[in-house]
Figure (cartoon, each protein chain N blue to C red):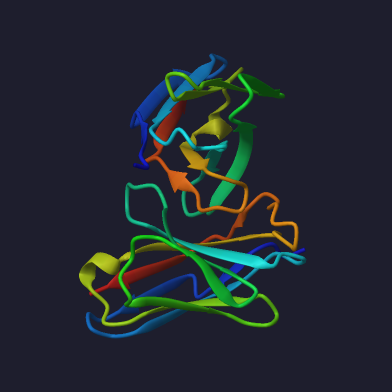
Length: 116
Length: 111
């Protein structure tokens, strides 16, 4: 089992550009959550996707958007990049299922985004 | 509001016990977690406790919860150099809800 995989591992973008980060959940998991971890800080919740819909959203601007595909993989898109968007972006997957009781959330290794 | 606070740094000698503390503000938190992050790695769930429990023990790890004071602690017995990492406390309203993390405590284990 490959666990949660994220791509790319590192990325450098210029201010104003757009970026797409990808996440494949652990096998059997149906829910994907995205977190932003700035240097020296704890992860901050961005949003969560279940059944291809955004279920919950944290306090992030609309520049941050996402998508979940029928195979449960997910993308995080960030438009009009700012220097402050430089961070480690973590994806976590879990199995919620119809009874809405989640299993443990497994985290990927993250994508390190640097905006210059 | 939602806020989780942790002390920034802890240094212990190998073989000693480590105690990492955390306070949270949201009284509706149902699940409280401890995660470990090693350099360049993602987050690894160490253990969690339900809010209706006072204590949970899992091998070298002991979690204590004081719900009245909204205080959570993680004790690591016989701390090893491999335990050196950043430890995050996190809370959640339910098992499928978003995690609210503290800023992390960096644990340094001296040989």
